[in-house]
View (tube, rainbow, N blue to C red):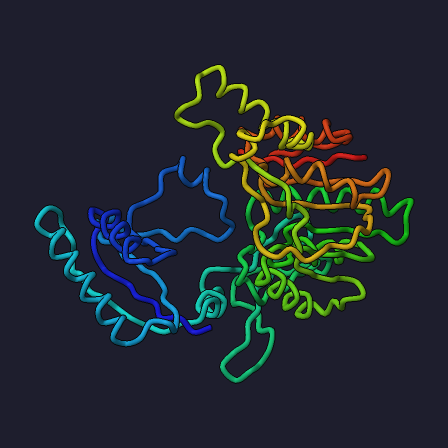
Amino acid sequence: MIWKKISVTTTIHAVDLLSEFLSEQGIEGIAIEDNQPLSEDEIREMYVDIPLMPDAVDDSAVVSFFIDSSYTDTMIDQLAESIRGELRRLSEFIPVGSCDIDMSETSDDSTWNDNFKNFFKPQRLYGNLVIMPVYEDENGQQDIPVEADFDIKPEDKVIKIKSVMAFGTGTHETTRLCLGLIKKHINDMGIIKKDLSLMDVGCGSGILSIASVLLGASYVHGLDIDPQAVEASKINAETNGIGEDKLLFSCGNLLAGNMIAENYISDSDTDDNAESVKEKIEKASLGSGISSVLSAEEAARMVDIENGTTDSVPKRKYDIVVANILADVIIPLSSVIKDYIEDGGVFIASGISESRIEDVKIALMNNGFTLIDCEQENEWFALAAVL
């Protein structure tokens, strides 16, 4: 789909008020870019795996949003004039900058996907696993490596990445932790089992799935709730010359129908009642079932995790299941993932922050898992557990 991107140049003093104004006009998905450096605490808290680009420090900012083809030229002109009017009003109280409004057409994924080579360079992920971004030039020549001063060794296993439209370049700590546990358990299981199967839940751009094949898995199934992630993963598998007989990607949601808390407490809850509701919701999220622990009023505070496709996922069992997601997803997942793991199989969970590691351990143990590995890099953890 072709979208029109509208960018308003203003200042950091005006971005919140302008964003609120745009929201009132029915605009969703507002992006803000500024030149303020991130603090060390902010960098540690961010779950991103692309290099952060240094910026000069000033008070300029750009507020951007996208509109689709339902907006006519007249509607766009009226929206731009409304924005200018709001900025004139705000200028009486705060600095609003140049107020330039820029419009350009773009697709929903091509801008990032075509230019990722400017930000994404070859890197050694773990041991002999190397990630190599490739692209197609203007003449249609395929799989050209991104230029970089990088030494590829004969023993290296190179993962070629052509599409990152679903994000995921593999360079975050959680990915490295996951790769270490995948390599270890593929090697351990490979000693006693010839045809080893693996499932990658939340496959993103397919990096863990592709790495698992290169590390020796005989069959890998990558699953994601986002159709764009599945499309990116398929492109990357094809780029690495891996067919669907060894690596299959599909769109599905193992947690469709499961529930999480929308809000733990409400303003009307007493302190004692609020703590009771919180304990019950946490118990439900550990796989104990909602109806058995929550009243109707309490259950009304829950929302469906169903987010994305609800395509059915066959109940095949795998020797290893990997989920590099986040603790808030791993916890409810621990109550359903065992249906997809062979007896004696391994569940590898990553994307767990230091503040949630004990919650995840409790969830796994409450659902019949025995913890066998725990790895840490900076403030991130990965666990391996066996059924």
